[in-house]
Image (cartoon, rainbow, N blue to C red; front, side, top):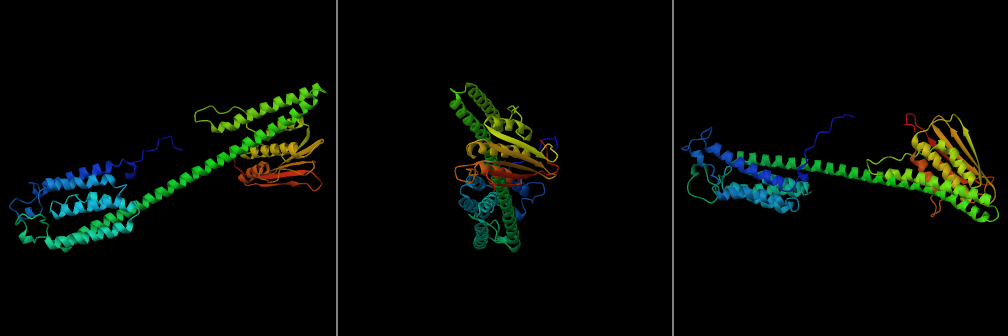
Length: 418
């Protein structure tokens, strides 16, 4: 990644304040029209005053200047009322040219209004309206226009020239250029809007996935430790009078489980910290902490045997965390639901070249609330963890009694390790 800062992007017209474009259009129309008039009548390249062509255009008077200003003023409302603004600027431009003022860039306000109509989604209306307006202009100019030989005779309100074929072709050509340009702007705006919607949807999906991940972490962390605390609290209450020494052991286990719950909960909630805050310093849960997990389960009265098959090695962080949480949730549910009596659980971790297998089974009564009933999240959360990594998950009663949970989590080559 380059260390150079990204070049600033010019804002799109739609991102600017509503008055910026009308102001620029007004300045260009006034300056361009006066400049065109000066060039036409000035000493540099323009016709002499005795040349009959100097009557082709009427000099800008206050009414002509007002028409040049009126169009940009109407553009202030183009975003909210694109169609009325287009009609208004079209009428102003038509009056300007019927008054036979110098051409210049006087059509710019109408062009901007036309683009606003197309971008607003009224493409057909823009094309039909533009062609209709040109037809009306040519019809009126043909009826009231003056011929070349009569130019300059009298003081007519609309001393426009009668348009010829070349003039009509030129103006229609400019109209098509504006309409096609407006279509291109519309297409680009729609693509930009679609891309923005796609980014927003992706952000929402990521936020949803992150909330789900945090919910799973909180469930796994709290459910395991609170279950241990609940079991040991019951033992302590039962033995408080008869066997104070055993009750003390149970209370010590409660203290350790609550400490572990707080530590892991701080680690999980750390993902919600604001940028710039110090990251949690507690170690991330993984299979290297399996001995601690087994010890806490045994302190709750559960006999646990852990076995490893294959070459034990570091795993990618996501796989390592998922494997640990699946074992943790499985042992929690053995403690909760496997029934009374001394219980034994077997935890088997099998390492293969492209996956790791996690299996937890117990010798309980085999009737478990782990099944996907509406009130529980255990099986559902473990299945989601495995599915998120592209793995498989199964859980159910064992044929000889008890319950079994098995997950196969793929380990992709080149994945960053923990």
